[in-house]
Image (cartoon, each protein chain N blue to C red):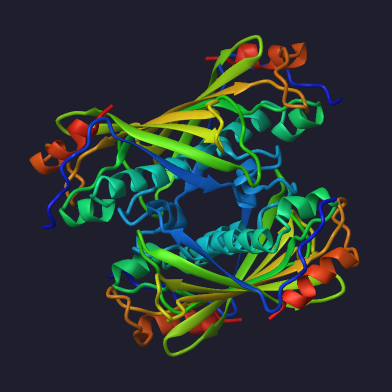
Length: 144
Length: 144
Length: 144
Length: 144
């Protein structure tokens, strides 16, 4: 098992996504359901930057399925927009944690889409399990 | 403009979806983001059964983009499951309305996924507009 | 292992799909990549009607990943179109088979999209394996 | 209308994609239909690097819908794989052009997926139209 980084304080990441034609619908905007894909991209980059790619979480016998997903759409994204996704962990509990997301166009400071996802911690049989110390020690200090 | 049905009281619909391989992920379950597609299927069938297919809503100059989407995942669906989707309108306001969804496997009474979506009423320039009487008179009595 | 039906001759199925908003793009038509989802829906219904749901194929230790996919787009589908999908098996070989698809709008006889997929027969370790007799005896007579 | 770059000879681009969980299916591999999304990403980057983002093509009154899509799957991609996509234009005709794609894992030289797409050139009413000189002069020399 690789050694984990010493965990950062109040850790937040930024990742980017260029809107494809297939993401748009006939209203000319990114369809609502696709944002959950962008959220997943951000979670993946978050854990990678924290030194623990999600594939490694799975290799250690855990899964983190969603128990809740939420998005609030304040304004639309369009074809070829460059979406800036900010993501952080906002909650770490005994057997769950929560990610928050904010989406902006390029360098703008106006939130267009906000969201969060709640994740259970389960074992390979998908049964809820207590968060192991190595994961708690990594996520808890990073929490914002 | 075709004449609308007299609106039903406390109207709810049931529609079905058979899970495809492409809906699953390597955890062996339907991926979280796909449920918003099932929600859309249910909304479309709801309006059709109410006598007002959504294409007709658009033909009358309105669009109803999402302002909020929410899903709570209690249990998973798997490949080839037949999902029963129940949907109804739970709120009708001056310039918005809300759909609620409950997803079950086959004839089961155990909710596996619950969700709702909030919709703004906008014109063809995507500017918020007051709900017209013909739409209010259709949706308001149907509300549960 | 359940007993299989006696196989039909030159077997073809018809299945239906109602186009969702999320399937369209800002050109106002169904985006090219989504047709492969409709192909999968048709394959699933084909095997089910043949008496062998694909889940049963997997329960018997086989997988049938694609080795080739092809689509020719003659005309577009739009939001709320009802797509009629015709599908049949056009080839059965030692370790592979091929499905063909034709997509029409409603009862029209004009093909809008044609396609095919080639499938390898592999075991649970995803290694190519000779088609077992029970599968050959089912698919071979059904071939058109 | 912005001035276009002098066109490069035999132009090819490389772009990257990190496989998400939502791209995988229960076989543990990227589902076949998603590759057409990766093809679109590569086309977009190709035109951008050529100095003509596709949004600009549309602003000039053209659309380039697919008339054919083809993929050959030699080997699978998995969760978190970094896909290297090479793309180039392989044909430019009076009213159509063709893109070719090759997908590799990281720096590997083994093609896992190969594909091409054929595109018609149409106007805003989606009627086939002769390729304008400014587009021919850009794409023709870039062709490999």
